[in-house]
Image 1 (cartoon, rainbow, N blue to C red):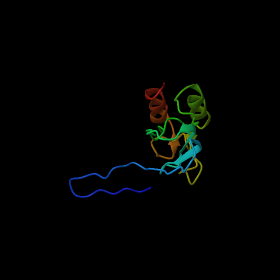
Image 2 (image 1 turned 120 degrees about the vertical axis):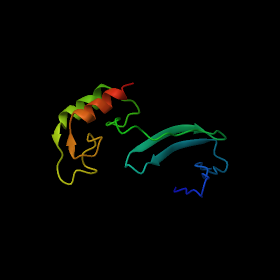
Image 3 (image 1 turned 90 degrees about the vertical axis):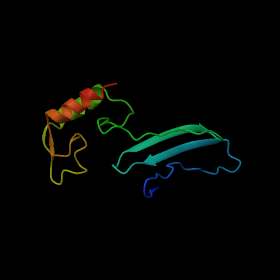
Image 4 (image 1 turned 45 degrees about the horizontal axis):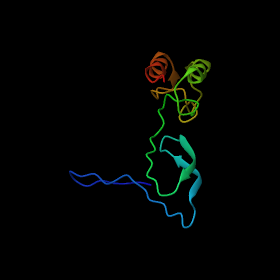
Length: 111
């Protein structure tokens, strides 16, 4: 979904899904512009939920920033292979190198 805005205003960023007679959404996948995805399961019908984009520092995509993200970053330490984007998910500052600023970003987001 791509929502626009007008001069001095903002469009609502919500989506409404009709489920017919279904009472549960078995699986919902949100694909974000940065290539990451969010997977939700078992959502009850008639509810409003807020889905937030995952942090870039959540390298393993599990919804938290922790030890595995740090390990993945350390494994990728150094120059990224060409082309570096999007094939170097540990390069959080998009400089085609996994280094200290990426390390500090993981630490700053640590859950």
